[in-house]
Each structure stands twice: as C-alpha cells, then as structure tokens.
Image (cartoon, rainbow over all chains, first blue to last red; front, side, top):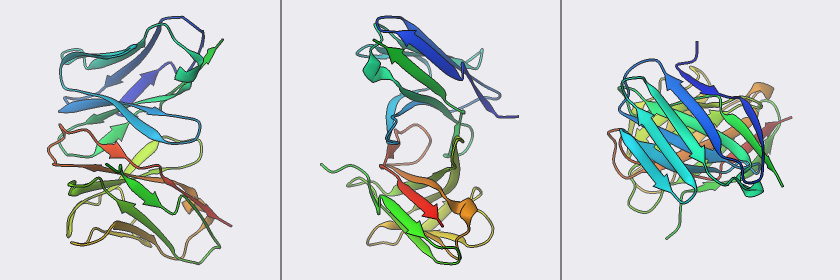
Length: 108
Length: 115
C-alpha cells in the first residue's frame, strides 16, 4: 500500500476551469511538497508546506494536518498547465516519499 | 545563479557496461538526493548524501549501485554491470540544509537507456 495516495490519477479540463488535485498520507509528516513534471521530464518544486495554505500566482496549496490531506488548486487553468503533478511527503527522515502523480491535460 | 546540473542528459549503455551519472548541486548546497523514475512509474528515493557522507542509502539496490559526494566535485551515482531494468530517468535534488523543511531543487535528470 502506497503511503501517499493521489487522486485523480488522470484529469482533463477545458481552459479556464478550476482544478483540484488531492493528496492523502498515512502518518504524521514534517513537510509536504507539490511538484510539477512537464512532458519533457523536468521537475519543478511548486510548494513546500507544513501547515496552512500557500499561494503563487494561479496555484494554491492547502494542507490539513489533522486529516492528513493536502490539495493543489489551479484557478483559470491554461493548456500550459498540462503536466504531471506529484505530491511528496517527508515522514521522520529527510527523504521524499512520492505519490503516483496526477496527469493533467488542459484543452483550449 | 546556476541551478542543479546533471550530466549527461542522455546515456546509452549496453548490458554489462558501467554507467556514471553526475550531479552538481546548487552553489552553497551541501545535501544531495538521488531519485529514480522507472518507465511509467513514480519517483523513488535512492540515496541521500552530504559532503563526504552517505546519510541514508535505504533506497539503493544492494548490488551494483553506489553513490558518492566528495569534498570537491559533483555527486556521482555509479551503476556497474548495467541491465535492461536499470533503464530509467535518474534525478538528483539538492538543498542547503537538511531537516525536511527545506525546498529540494531538482536537476533535469539523466535518462539512461540500456540496450
């Protein structure tokens, strides 16, 4: 059983739609990361959270420590947002444990 | 201000050869992680190194794989006697200090193909 679960696995949207990707994990963590992997394969760190909410442009990430759940929201989605979005957590060591990723396609 | 650099970006090896993957962390960063992404699979942790020390190698296969991060120069992930199952994208990430609360900056990855 994967310690980090993401949903949905695949997501398609029309340009302009509001998008939510969910991540849940099994035990207490010290931090949670949201990453973006583009079709070319490069990985970009979007957010690192240990509590609350963070916003960067059209991206918003929230985390609920009690419920062991985080969400990544994209407002006014655009085709260039098409990528794989990966949730990764740090438990009691420094290494990242990754979710399986959510493949997002935004159509014009 | 260069980011994390990895080379080569693409590496082709025949079965039985050795593969050496290099990772130069961001300037001032002394912590490096290596991750592997098998085709159609998620990222998996391999090893965590600080300068001259292996901190956690619990994700490394027991044989043929080794990693180092010398005092001078890049971190190197070495795969001896490669097999087809080693074909994957290998990413490194660096951060300035450990503790789990720092952002990890990823390199562009090395795509290893074993023929």
